[in-house]
Length: 85
Image 1 (cartoon, rainbow, N blue to C red):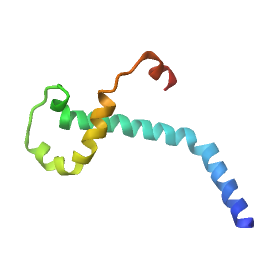
Image 2: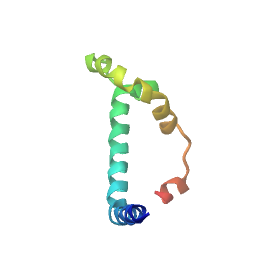
Image 3: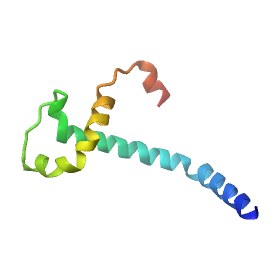
Image 4: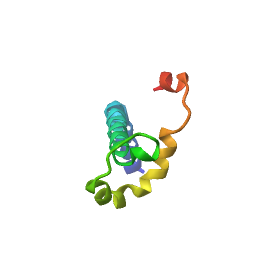
């Protein structure tokens, strides 16, 4: 019982002190991932890009991310989506 209280306090303090940094880190990772996927699969959504050797080498690693990325990029957005972020 005592260890569960210690764990709860530890989780609370980690969330209290590190939430902002982790949130910023995840948003930066998402932004870099969008740029990388745009460079790799931009031609699927109409963004012109050159096809080269590296597309073929990286495609097996990123093909499972293609459908969710395409859905996120082509999703209709409105003004309030940006206000919330």
